[in-house]
Structures are given as structure tokens and as C-alpha cells.
Image 1 (cartoon, helix red, strand yellow):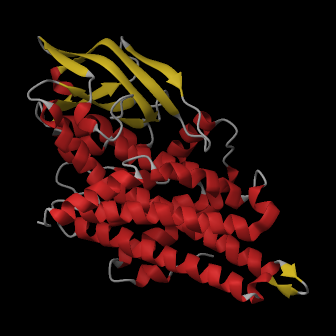
Image 2 (cartoon, rainbow, N blue to C red):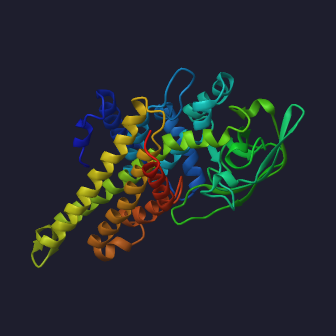
Image 3 (cartoon, rainbow, N blue to C red):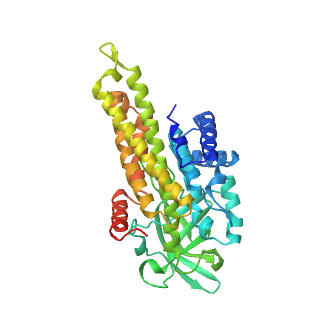
Length: 383
């Protein structure tokens, strides 16, 4: 059982502790039965299960409500500790409709959020392009006004839930100004003429990922989220919220790795004594525990600040993501080391964690991008 004392920290209210404990019990009972042999089928099942159990209600917020970032982080941490694909399924329901939650009209919210929050529809966030991963301002996909429609042309890649999503938030250049000021956001349902899944992308920790193409794909002007040319700001506001939750998922992976390592060194005997009796091993466990708690402090500081009304938590979220993902990689690597040969055996928990953590240091802003963000915020002064 993972250490739960952090739930007593002043970042949390009673409802947060109750949420974390209820989800932990549910996940322990329900997630072990998921067959990961078919990744896309597993994701569909997980979205349906999370929706039926009510957990997806936290993934979006309708008019007059706010996203509860502490709850989002607690859910992602707990799910990641139990099952990385379950965390992915939950996270994408929030990220995919984050722009609708934060900037959508009442009609857009009523059309889609009840579906994604119930698990009836799967969502995706289509921002990355082949030549503009972290450099969103240089996106080249276009959306050209034609009467009452916009016509989309271009390509998106590394899109999570690509190929299985029912609705996509797509960012394209509408040309109001150069660079970041000329992007807009659109709601694009799957299956429209000219919208194709060009390629399924395979990665070392299987998730549904795809490259998408848009060829004269028409959407009504009412599909635009927010105002023309405001898409970059919308995308950054979404990432401002959900970047902290990536750090929370990394924290969940790290907690599980620490649990597995503690069990291993307590039960594995060398020369008649447990591994845990060795001072070198105790030192490793201590380092892992410090990294986990330090990550948790950064994660929940960022989430608390946003929930307390901070307009932006760009610096805090970037710090949380950078530190929690990088340190989780180290914690998991040490857990593998402490498992010896069993640590690299396919099917072992720490082997799975080793594959799952690596992507978190890349998506939603790679570690070096977070360093740039933190440096600019620090050098430019914090307002």
C-alpha cells in the first residue's frame, strides 16, 4: 500500500482525500481485469468503465464551473499507480475537451461534454504537426473561411486517441496575424469527408496514436472554439491546467516503483539477510522516497495555486512537470536495478513502468522546453 500521508497536507480538502481513497479502492478491484492485448479495445473499455463509475465527471467543466485541478491530479496519480493505460484513457477525455471546457460556448459544451464525461464519446487534442512539435506558433495547417464554413487542410501527428476518438479539438492557421496570433481552434467530429487517419503510430508503451490528414475538410464556422486567431492562447491555457496532471501521472508511476522496490528489498535475501539490511540499498530507497515527496510537493502546489484562482500557473506547472517526470525516470530505473534480472523481464511491473515513464518526459512539452519556460518566467519576472 502506497504512503497516503500526503493527503493530510494543507493543499487538500476533505473531499479530495475521500476522492483519492474511493478511486484507489475502485481501481484495485476493477482495473486488474483489463486485457491489454488489444490497446485500442482496452482504451474503449477503460473510457466506458471510467464513465460508468462517474470518474470522468471530473474531466470537464460546464458553464459556470471550474476544472478542479487537484482532483484531476489525484485521479491521474492514482490511476497511473494502478494502470498506465487507465490513466491515459482518463487524461485524454480531459485534454481532448479542455478547450471546450475553458473556452467553448454553452452550446458546444452541451453538445460534447455530457458525452465525454459519461464515456459515450472519446476525445482527442490535435495540436502537434510534423515540423512543429514544441514550436506551436509555426503550425502550418490551415483553416480557410468559405461562406459559412472553414476548410481544413494539413496534417497532425502524434495525436493521442487518433483513430478511436469521436471528437477532436484541432488547431489550424486562420491567418489573422503571423505566428501564434494567427491560430484558431475547431471542434472536428470523426468521420467528416476529407478527414483521414493516415497512419497508426507504434510506441514502446502501447497507446492509441495516429497521424491525421485533412484534405478540404469542411466544418461549420460554429465549430470554432473562442475567437478567430485566439487558438494559441486557448491551447496554452489548456496545457497550463493539464501539464500539472502529467506530472501527477509521473508521480503515480514513481510511487508504484517505490512500493515495488520496498517489497523487493524486504523479501529478497542475500547471504541470509534481506537486501534491505544493506546500507547501500537503504540509501537508494531513501533517495527514491525523497524524490517522490519532492515531486508531490511541486505537483500539488501547482494544482492548489490554480484552484485558488491564479490566472496562470505556467511556471509552477512547468516546474512540476520537469521535476516529477525526470525524477520518476530515476526512481523507476533504480527500482529496476534493485530487482536485478527480474527487473528487465517482460511482464514485471517495474519493466512496464520503465517503458511507460519515458514518453511523459516528451509529450505536452519536453523537459528541455520546460526549462526554457521556467527560465523565461524567472528572468522576465513573475507577475
